[in-house]
Image (cartoon, chains in turn blue, green):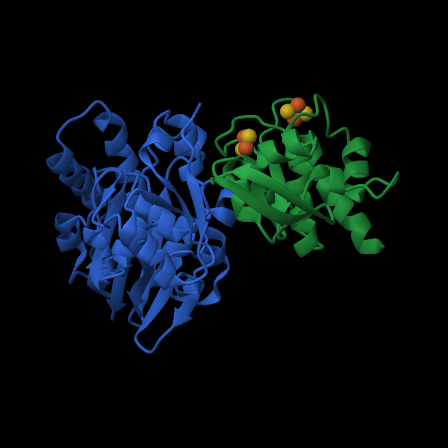
Length: 291
Length: 158
Ligand code: FES
Ligand code: FES
């Protein structure tokens, strides 16, 4: 017999935060696409929580809002809402592509960007693009709010800096400069086949045929997605026409190995990452050619 | 104390149940309402056999806690036909031999229904995307996609 757990449904953010402050064994639930699987797979899951806190009705966590210099994406925004959003398609296409590549229609309809990141699996596909777009995460607790860069949110697989009494409210993405190219690549689509689902987010600001700023964030290649500074240095302040995709791709896989060391999966991951880097750069060159 | 009262609309009928916090919508439908058309395949959101329509969207009922559907609309495969009249999708699946063992069929139908309710003339690509969370181990997807395409055309004409 499994332990009884309680279920709270909150309409007000304050009420939800108060509950979390009083009981840090309460588990927030939104779309449930990860949590319900965990609950099924982990015999002790129910033993370790006191109850579920349904946060789906919290308005402050919903919707995509355009502000003067940034855009807010609520933690409860589903992958499908991201895919359907015109402003995201226009300005953050790498994020849209990452959301479109997640799971299946049913999962995209329920799964949220907040859940994807909070769950912090190495394959949380949306985190790479969020880091590449230099998003900040707004965390709120009963005691107050704090802002954490998306790049610092996940500390190791399945572990974030979000405290038990905090909720992720939204991501705040600065508006990209006018000539920004963004691209998302991924290998391995179905979760059923997912040993690893390597991905890559590349965001480049271009002007006069040059790359001004660039972020390159591979996913599922390192314990936590992080920008590959060495690769970025080989792209930044260079003429796009002079970029050599194969060379930069080789540097990317070396940078990966320098972070992770040689592992059983390295012989697979190296060519996979190289393929993605090459594809992204070839597309960057095509876009530049057409300007 | 951990029994939660849930009131929702199920295939156009107002219903009310009391469930434990962790109960899955899939089990509520099958065990409490005897709606066994909704199938359990994988239980972890991979196969789509348990697909139902929740407020207009196709979802995996194995991943939805029943406690979350309070005040919402749920439609299952049993809610497709009207009396003796099959939904055009159901008829089209028969006509196109898109059913073999039938285990995946309720889920396929619900994913397709959710699509056609929003998009009356989907492209083949859109149909494939709508069915990307539904696995079939017998039929081959061509007949299924053809069946959805034909049903869409038929519904458009009417
Ligand atoms: S049983 Fe729900 S997706 Fe397989
Ligand atoms: S008809 Fe048997 S699984 Fe699809």
